[in-house]
Image (cartoon, rainbow, N blue to C red):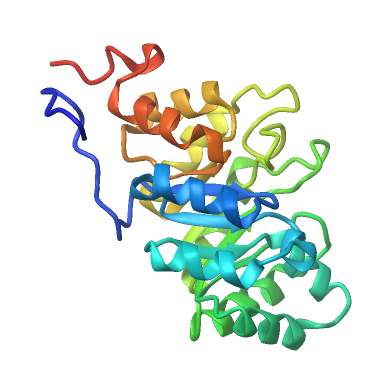
Length: 252
């Protein structure tokens, strides 16, 4: 903070359990990653190497080391987990994660049919060695879960050992907890929150209007994910009421 402006909301600090910002790295170069760290590392808690990019991007190990040196958790996109699972290569996936020296892992089933009991077994097994994120929801807008189903799946995955459950929205913000036009399924989210604690959910919210809505509903320290690297500082300004959309939210 370059000036001690009064009446700003209190933000949790790094190594936080709530108020998380998860950024999507969809193939940044190492130099771009260095620039991201230089400008934004104080505001980033988690970086997801999106979908299958870690298989084909250059300097992946070097980027992971850079992020980890700056106290940022790193995990691979859940789609890559699914790509290994559908090929019956679970052990190979774990070996790949270990070779990258990752401590965090995502378990998802947004693109494949995976028995939920089996998914929870994966979570339970992996949670003995890794910090686990598990994702609930589908990547196709025509696959809809009832609110009671969202709650049931989330609770079972938390019970199985997930640190946080991720509410699916994709990097487009048009599925899962959002409609295909990006409209927020507010009734769904509010019903989920009657049963699942806010701090246990990481809401994928790539669009500014979605971020604003969550901040207004749950405050500055809501967990938000799938943030574009260029949106990290703008999001932090939204969290602090330093942008027009949330300007009056925290004034006393």
